[in-house]
Image 1 (cartoon, one colour):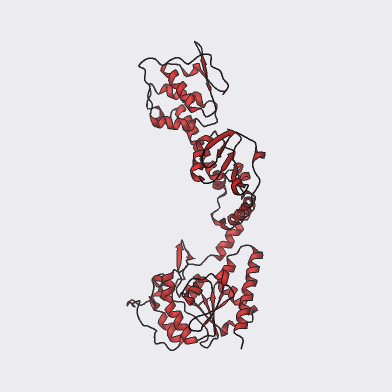
Image 2 (cartoon, rainbow, N blue to C red):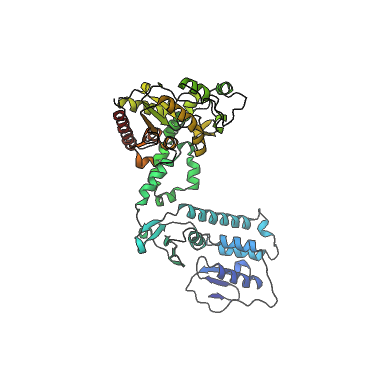
Length: 487
């Protein structure tokens, strides 16, 4: 395996990653005081040694730190053909300079650290950008990925994928080496070319749709993105065809997001709170409003509601509005950013969709009563923005007291639950809106509850065709409501 003569040593390594062979040869040569310039390092699995390396002198010892050995094993995976000589030169020097790896100004150390970091980055890129594609089904199912590493990292990185994807059969193909896992044993075969990798599978169209919808143009930093995800990896990613258009349209998309973003509380926020939230404590079990004989009286009582903690951050209570003799009541989830500031339900973007669809369905909103299951705006602050947060079961239950009072005073012939939160409040349990949409459920007290989506759902759909189709479905729901309330 290794040959030498009186003046020069030639060390043949079995592969580009034969660290064990290099370490054994380096130890023997260093203990025989072989200078770095006397050694030639060759990668040749078929190399035939004429004789063995010189024996280790009796009683000789040469120790290096475990840290250096581990770091050297990483740097050994670099693609620089001079790495074998560099590592030996450092090893040879460390006999007299044991602290050499800590001398950051030394040229050999700087080069060693650069190699180590480059290999580490390449291993990270492989973990981040390997994309498996499904091949076969049933017992023949396996997953294949193509990757083009800069360095010889496949063997060193493969155990990571074994741990991550233990339960599936997979292969990672590269030009240098291919790794295979059959759920029991990790094996390696010679490298292949790009044509051996599979084409797209069915799941990648779904992934592209998801990626397009989560892409945030406001956070786009093109230079940082290309630094972390160099273009050389794009062709292996299913989302790659989307990236140029998403980047090109990022500025316009970001402006659109800013135009639609929730506004911060109005300047009079604190004054409104001071008016509606008196300093005196109102116990959660208070019967305040229990004897209200009109919506106006009930609304006034609700201004000081403290039945759940949401009152602390909201600008004000947003109570229902509409005629007390309304034959139909629409119940949404909770007030949004604009409703919280205005003090009226359904005046924001979702309210505009709601109004337009009601008009098309020939329903006069002025003759209906519109309210929410929860009367305070629940949100998460993000800078100056307030992001909607879904009410929990406790908050819905606490606010149901007010909704029940509204329904008792109005006595409508039909209540329309706009979304899952409204349905949960009205029916006292969680129901699948998607499956029961368009149906009418009669409560034990005889009240009919019609189930449909909240109009804000339409606003969250990005695809224009899908958005229009969902709007048409909502219109048909409102037309059904119109028919159910016809005299």
